[in-house]
Length: 318
Image (cartoon, rainbow, N blue to C red; front, side, top):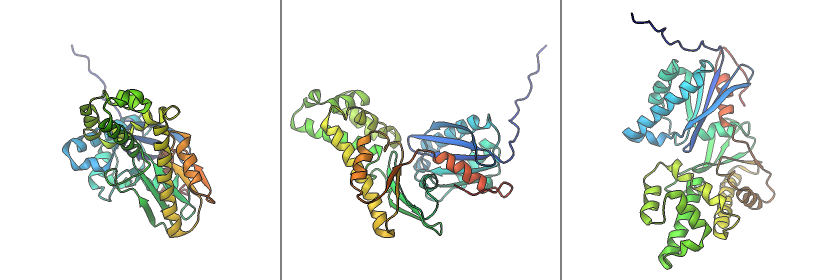
């Protein structure tokens, strides 16, 4: 006789929960907010980018990440609304909404996608209050004016610019190392930076560096910035790369200040947190401007924005 197994059941819907998603190239963070705004659960899964939608492999990766995120979040309850910020997002969200809705068992209209910068801004400022400089895998300056209009500086992608972000730091380190090798092969053995970088990428042969920077998603490349920051205390080249990153991030704030007038500046993102040299240099490059380092809680802000968008559970968004 075959024992019958009970059918798996979904968690009971938790009335009024808002799910916030902050999807970046390195990782994706999510949070569930209860009515009133308290965060009741959060977690992280693999990185996501709207740019992945351009290839079959990328689309498969997006769907797999959505599935993992939904499985993790549904343990805590079924959200009623979702606010998702996605790096590289250009406005086309119909397929993304449908995929995520299938995993969460929601109506696609209950899910709203936007740029990850929009939710990151709301984690630091109300509209019109200040400027956000975000440094993750890439970099960007953002301002949401009093009318809710979004304005940007930078954020053109790692191939073109994104100075000061993790990918840029990784690229600058590899560029310096290989220029030194062009002039004096084997010089890497005397460089703490080169030793740390080659250990990270898997070897000192050019083939290892080539495969690392050209054969992976940009978020994976950006993680090399961790190795650069780790040796900044004993390698002056690594330290100067981080100072240069700070100057690049300050440039974004100055661009917005020149366009819209002086306001406080917040800097956020995992690349900005790599080493104090980055923010210290940024602050020195912004004389007379108040600069704060904001905690990376954009997924919390997104969860509360989801609550605010629910007509049955109105609250003031962050």
